Length: 227
Image (tube, rainbow, N blue to C red; front, side):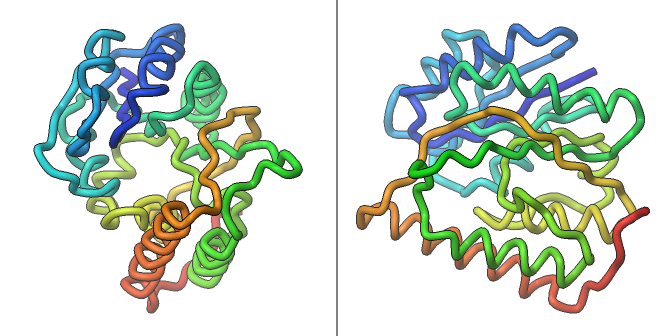
């Protein structure tokens, strides 16, 4: 069975379209939205679109939300997806194929590079990519991608997610060092781009700190990717 887990914080603008697009994928067993202390109508819109909703009264962060959602699902294949994908979320089907064919234990989506559409300054991506390569020897095109599918066994083996925005980087390193195979699959997915105003800069700073903490916690880990 395939379970989808979507962490969401104040995503009322796109959450409905995201869920409806995912519902069109064959063989999806359940779609679970973890409403992470939203102050808008995210939870209500997710419920109206047909998802099961878990509500947290306070903002616990992405890693904790993912753990909560995975624990509440029962699929042996878990898809982790961001809430702001909108109608392009149906491309998650592309990530399922290598898992179902036994070709990978985790599949990560890469996004197209659109000139002039990058929202950040790139320092978080560079840190994440450097840290993953240092620990595992594997260079990731999309080290921060939140769009990934994995076998539940992977999550159980690594013992859950790193806190906050360090979730993806920690999961990638932990999975590779546990001997699991990770592949990246190109998609044409898009999502909301973080700009360069002060609010966006603060978001990037929080993300940078979370990724740095995840890497520091794994500073002694060294492994090589599977051939």
